[in-house]
Image 1 (cartoon, one colour):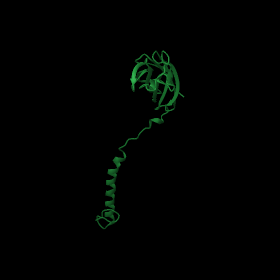
Image 2 (tube, rainbow, N blue to C red):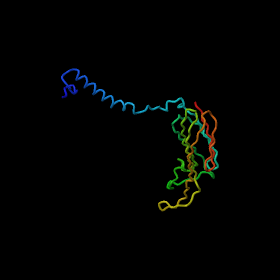
Image 3 (cartoon, helix red, strand yellow):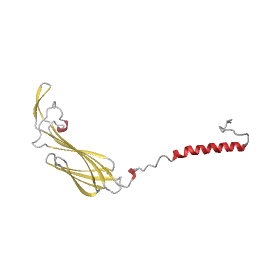
Length: 194
């Protein structure tokens, strides 16, 4: 029989109710205890001492894309995007508005540009070394060719596009790391803790 307290009545004595209550508590302890220990603790890696600012410099020397340098600041675990624009080899040309697929090689004034886009991501390990992923995209205009757009003949350049993703480890004490891309572009990267 079950009384209003929710416990099974074994007999009318207080001792019987105590034994039944103890049995229920023991059963709950067996069921609840393993669940409480099933999930291991999680260590939050972003609170390590190496999550402060990283000042990094990327230098580029390339026959295809020119020379440029940029110094930026990020934190461990973040990504940073920047770009360089310069005059293309042979000078800039006017690009008609109707030319297709020229956004990456045309500036706001409507002339051709050479453009490099960099995405830099670094995660600093406890050792102080940075695990770096760098995305490189280069756009340069090829000489204009005659095409027909909407019944009109236009002289339109095409995009000489190059892209490569590189992954490497480097120190964050200021020493330089050199990376050569498959097109011969040389990137020199240095990083230091601020």
